[in-house]
Structures are given as C-alpha cells and as structure tokens.
Image (cartoon, rainbow, N blue to C red; front, side):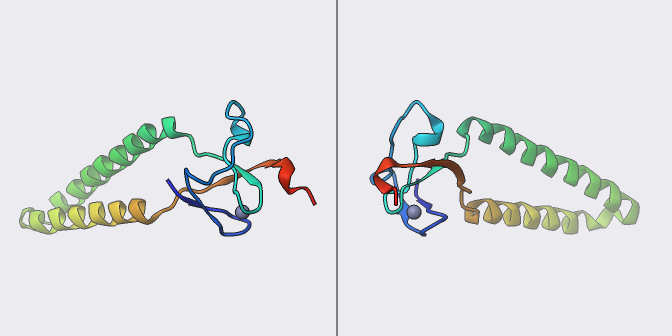
Length: 113
Ligand SMILES: [Zn+2]
C-alpha cells in the first residue's frame, strides 16, 4: 500500500515508511523524506463501509424500480442498464479514490529544525 505524503508528496511505501513506535498509532506510519507522521485509515471499518454502499445500492435499486413501475413495465431493460451503469461508476470511483492520510501531529526526532 503506497500513500503520497501530504506535505512533500513523497511516495510512502511499506518498505520506506518510518515507524518510531508501532504501539502508538500516531507514531507508527511516517514519511521518510520529511518526517511527517500520519494516522493510517482504520482497516476494520472497511467492511462496514462496503455494507453501507451495498445497502445504498439496494435501496437505490428499489427506489428506481418503484419509479419505473409507475412509468412503464417495458422500461425494465432501461432500468437494468441504469443500475449497471451506476454500479460501474461507483466501482470506478472506489478504485480511483486513494486513501486519505490524516496528519497525526507527531514528528520524528530526526527531522527537528
Ligand atoms: Zn513527506
């Protein structure tokens, strides 16, 4: 997993990341180029986010079905196409979206001015 440093745009990877204290989340993931530390996005929340996206998709589909059932029965293929398009758009959006790093406020001792 590579993340771009927010302050110097250095590409932080698993190989070059700084880790001053693995037990402290604020000191466990840092940029080796400028010493800025970041909080890693919580991985245990990702399943919940996926579930919420799934729920949103299902509810959107139900709402769309309700709308189209009023318009015409033959527009089922149009509806299916729209839902497929929406799924593709969401997947592309999720794939392109990079992980947002949060500055932990901690700076490595090596990089004091
Ligand atoms: Zn940096």
